Image (cartoon, rainbow, N blue to C red; front, side, top):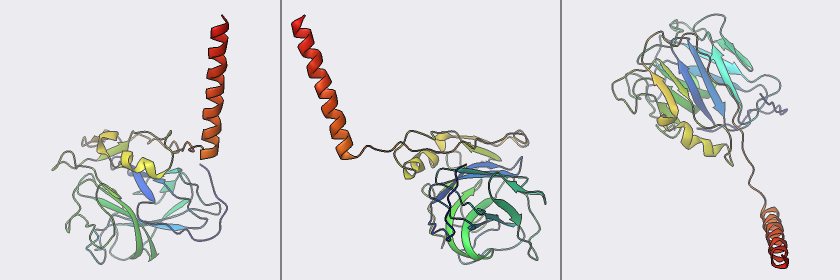
Length: 246
């Protein structure tokens, strides 16, 4: 994973990260960042249900800190043992936020929504970054109202192609290289045809998600492209002249 050296708090916006794996069998998650995350940035994750203006209680709050080096756009971070005191992240530090009334730490195999957000505290979101659900975004299972997130654009509903199902495993299997910008990958990530999604309980407890980074292929500057075309034209002209001589 690449790192960045900034010490300023990241100015992250909705959609700047996206979930790439959800595994209730293993109690694990992964996400990709489409923007550089500055050093010592804290992102909160909660599966308490958002009610439009506040979270309810009963489930969990965790916090991830990017660490002293920060994280470069395109990097993928994996969370494992999300339900245990030994929870961990492949980059940075993941830890529990222990609050009264919040004791259910596991990722549920049904009707669970997880939010990623910046906040003044775990219970006081200031910017929602992304959300993923294996149910529906509603008042019962967790709403998008007041989050600024949009299903299929900055939030993923895993049963969108199979309404009524409640997947316990889902992983993005689409492209991770070859596009000209990180934002260009969003269409692929939010297209569920690019995911493996399964509702078979317990089948994926030992599956490790793909943490390969997303990379971009820079578009040549206009001057460089013009020079390239001119060079190809010259080569073609020389080849034609040689062909005439033969």
